[in-house]
Length: 438
Image 1 (cartoon, rainbow, N blue to C red):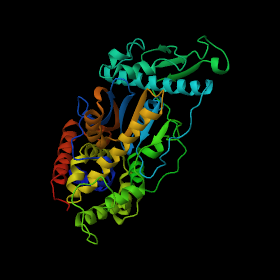
Image 2 (image 1 turned 180 degrees about the vertical axis):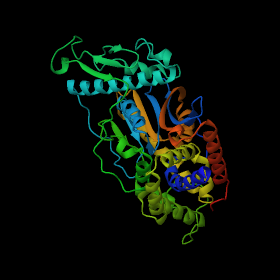
Image 3 (image 1 turned 135 degrees about the vertical axis):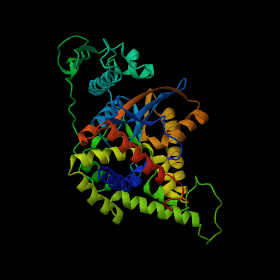
């Protein structure tokens, strides 16, 4: 009976993940996304990477993986990392293109930057404890606790905006980080006042005041006790810039009106069947993501039902976690002949990011670090092009837990958990067979 329930839930979540896989691609994404299990097999965690690329004489670039629904703690980690960078290029079809804000000087900016670095260092300390089981003895020891992380990540985090090293007091399960402010002395007022952040085993998340969206991804998040990216992340930041195609650009390319294509151009007045299939797939995808289609409405009803029961919620989270980790191959199989959609969603949108990255290097002096915040499925193509076309090299990585599922919360023991994973894997193998959904 339990396995029948698992099959039903996996099918429901599969409907949603077929839409939520928008950011994925047919190339394997193991360097950017992975699933880890604990020793007893009773917990699974989807992790996304922050990969650092460097080239002499230009800003360090971090590829920060995004996922549309996740634990709020993941968005806390991502927010802390992104807020501490000089420039963030983020995904968002239809967003405003100009750089936001202007140059801000003075103590107010330094206070803002220091607060971001305190959160940034806090995130790194928590990551170090997650890897080794204990906080490092000093902030300088972070590099030993996180050996895969590029030194620039840590060096940037552990000093305040006035160039003074942060101070730390810590115990087994707590720490307090302190900046002494502009004067480098305890106490003071205004810019000279101390800035602190404390951790006592639990992070308090402050979510931005964003209305809940009716789309299927918000319904998925609500049903599974997760958060939706547009609520979990605050995009209203001075140094963040939308780096994506507009809706008009995307639709134009999907319907054969753009460049960035491939394939022969049709004769004047002649419709291209491939473009027609791709446009139909794109329209279906847009409707599903906005909650307009009948399939989305049905999935929304079923997901609300799933969310009523903790055992079913845990089972559904496991199915979703495994599906997201393999969404690249599943999406390719589901699209079938509409593979042009994959090319547009990945290659053409990555071209926008690369153009913006080059422009930022040329037009924004003083920028030392740039983060690209995009769906992990974009990164195989994007990293390859940064290496081949721009001369970057991989320099380090940091893994952040996005979704953690405790199977014992669903009343499963280790053997039952193993059987459930095996069943989900077989179902995904079937969905990933080319031509299945054409």
